[in-house]
Image (cartoon, rainbow, N blue to C red; front, side, top):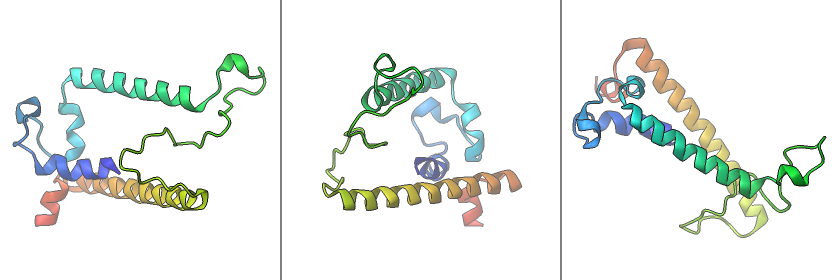
Length: 135
């Protein structure tokens, strides 16, 4: 969902951003190759740390599971629930939680289709999404 927002925001702030001396320009699909290497190193470290924390929260220690049954989840762990809910949006009722989880999955799938559409449009004519909307 953030990728879809990133397409629009990245093009909207082109030339106005304090990041990288506002040197990233053009359609959003070309932005990634223009970003400095330091950013990628920090991004990989951040993603690795987040995935490590998720693995510790959700999965049993491999030393504590049978050899022929690796990757077991902890008892009471719901995939995707890392205990991060600063706005208190997660319902306490299990039925409501399941409905909210389904809505989140469906919104994520729709956003992936939107991002794929953005990429296809930019590849087709080489113009940014906002530029296409204005013409």
